[in-house]
Image: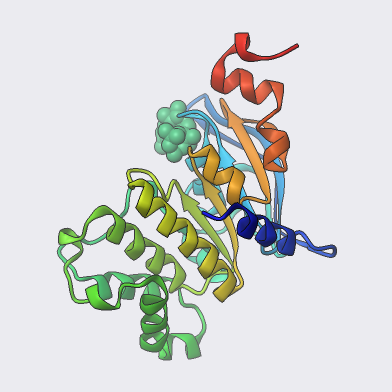
Length: 262
Ligand SMILES: Nc1ncnc2c1ncn2[C@@H]1O[C@H](COP(=O)(O)OP(=O)(O)OP(=O)(O)O)[C@@H](O)[C@H]1O
Ligand SMILES: [Mg+2]
């Protein structure tokens, strides 16, 4: 990926006057006494790419589940100034938040088109959008590059195409905020490059804000305007990726105490 190109991208997004699209305030999640999230607060600015990283079990996917209304939580979540913290998943989706899952969740016996249709039926809220569902689906299928595979059954797709299909399923709901949970996991370097370019492309084409959970720090450093690190359910650092990746606490979490320079 061309570094300069990506930087230009980031600079464009971080122009003065950007507004938060999402504000998470003191979100906590408890599973029968086990604290998966503790008092996590942060803001995501409109049109930025906001990265989330942290060790396995840090609470990253739980945070997405909470934002998407799949898990209840203590705390508030403001999306475009409306508190959505107690909304059910379909309502959150209708408000304009869509997500992909860490493991692609598809109906394997159904073809690509019908899978995406499920997303459209679930996620499109306005009557005129429902009436235009076929057109919206065709546009999204073309945007992600699945036109040639739309009649192929999801069970026979490779992982890359499965990920494209789950991305299309999210995009067809016409979101403003897209949550991507480890979209690059299991892909080859070439596929990672293609998928990252696609994320940037759809963000620009559809005027989206993106929150991406990833383990690949080099990718996060390249594409994110802001990076947040979670560890054991708590936010330990947030800021521009360059600063976050040089933070002592972050280095300690990833590399161990002995690698922290005094
Ligand atoms: N439904 C649940 N019931 C009980 N415990 C859960 C539940 N969901 C998640 N947890 C626990 O909460 C913690 C955080 O899980 P989560 O899946 O959010 O981590 P993660 O940061 O996404 O990890 P990974 O990088 O492996 O995907 C883990 O210890 C997990 O076992
Ligand atoms: Mg996870």
